[in-house]
Image (cartoon, rainbow, N blue to C red; front, top):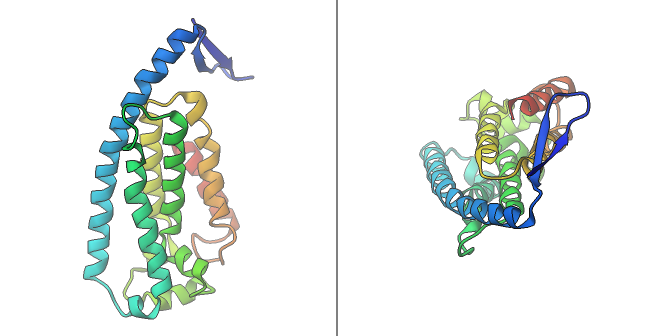
Length: 212
């Protein structure tokens, strides 16, 4: 009663849905209710995490805040997006569509990447190189500027939640390609210094694919 897509050359099958239309409709309705509950729970968890992160930054602010307000404005905007995006499911009375859930996940992934100090500073034009970013945030650890480790860990947590969510594989499988592609799109144009050069950035994108 279930339709599968057979992956050529591999012993793998991706379930596409029920053959019976009524069973498919009932299944989607059940999943949509669970998606709304998960979105609210994840939203609360992400909001607490963002507030704690912002509080930690507030306790260690240096003179970079008044000198580079545009960079910090972008960072705080991206954190607000991360904290509020999951709550987009709240207006839905009972159900949340899979497409809406995937859209929220993609928005959060983009916000996580732009939230990085190095990306934010270069995107708004406050810096033209990673060395200049290090001068902007003199009190920050070097790894906060030149490494994507913390951001990639957050992305993996977000993707793990997505693949653990009640979303059909035929929909969520797009994240296997989209997440690394987004990382490369927001990393390759940056000056050398953030996670090394081209080879290391591509290698990290491939590792991100494997980890998802």
